Length: 273
Image (cartoon, rainbow, N blue to C red; front, side):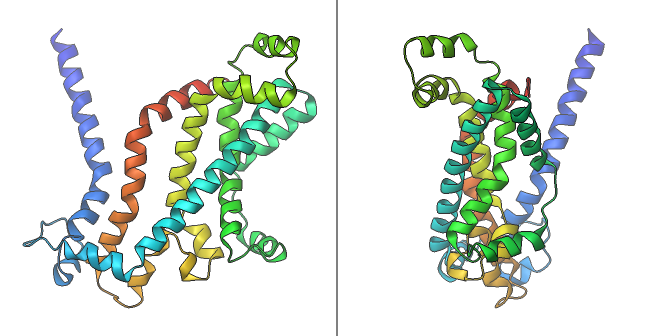
């Protein structure tokens, strides 16, 4: 009994230590966002002598964070809806009509989870399609990047839905579209919510795609707004830190609100993947 108690305490200590390590980068940014310019230059974890909340007002005004926020919201919401809509249809067809061709297409599609992106080729494609430096182009790119993992999760979850429900719908005269919309979608709600939350957080946090394919600063999302300070304020790490905090807050809020759906959806959807 005593041995189990000690083991339980050690596990809790390890969990707390691991959690604190994960929290250190955010704490470092948060502390330095409240310092003045001189104190923030060292980027240390030391607490500020005086709280400078005005850093956030400066960042919002000079960093154009209001317009960047709405750009991020547009990219994250539109790409999430598009990717989930396409992935749910593809996963349902692949799972319910498991022919050799569909299984080959499924495995080809989920290869995108691990395959690296060739940005040179992608740039040529964006130029050829006239989507480079456009908001629609970024939405399409973010959606495409999210589809492989979305299909993987939804495909596993569809396998847990009894086929008898489909057969009952067909007997009652449901068309394929009504069968998918009226019977499949309500049953897939847990995994669709999970995929929506994960895709939204990934799209909101994405830095590379807007950096490569958006040259106009008026179209930048919040993740690129930090460049408004690197050029003009080379050593103003207090403003850079404040910008990062404001950019991170929506992601943290979404995660806290949807973490239980993320865990339940991933565990139920990945079992039969």
